Amino acid sequence: MASEIVDLGGGYKALQNSTYRFGVDSVLLSDYAAKHALAGASVCDLCAGCGIVGILMYAKAGPFRLTGIELDEGRAALMQENYKLNGIDENASAVTADARNLPSSMGSSFDLIATNPPYYKYGSGILPKGRSEAMARFETELTLSELLKAAKQILKPNGRLIVSYSASRFDELVGLLPEFAFGARSARFVYPKPGHNASFILLHAQKGAKAGSFVIEEPIYVMERNGEYTIEINEIYNRKGRA
Image (cartoon, rainbow, N blue to C red; front, side, top):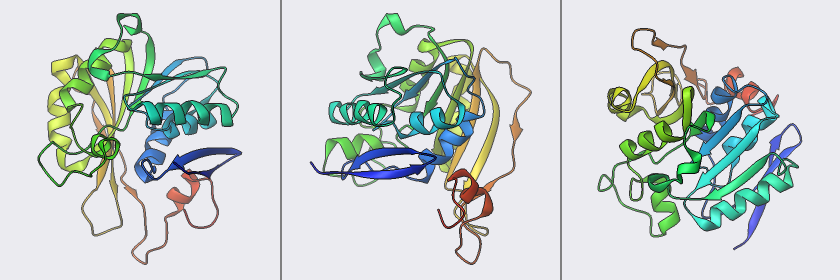
């Protein structure tokens, strides 16, 4: 399958193909998560696809030890190629694994997890024909509860969980956190432009944190009313022109 090289800015790049094309949610997740990643930490990109989130985090907050976990073997192989392409493969490794059955050796091993899991419940829409595309968008292989269970298993005490998720399921996500020993810390709602409903949210939770200190931060608008990209989006993309 043919792949193309995408310029990520700052000297970083990535291979992607027709079965995996990253979007603005991956870019904004990486930026939000990088604010909580410390140099020298152990970081996991869970449901990593071809590794874009981890690579962009590394560009902004590295060096740190990066592990990308992906169920699809083809995407995991592409992720490892991307780590090598960017010269971070000595500090980064791609692991083909099912988040529902992670090895016990990963238990309590990460300081931070960034994850962009499937947004939609199985049966809530028309599935893409390909398995890879379907499991990236719908909960055919991994439910929200299963994701949080995996995150609880592999995060260290007080570890951070940074999630990009559908705004329509925000209440469900926040409601499930205590069941898996997480406390919500902060969130940013992301809007296509002013006057529209939020499309997704960026959530920061902490393992073992108690309720009571949750902050809704300033929203992110991808575009202005006139259709031009906002200053913040251009800054995140590290571009002076359009994103």
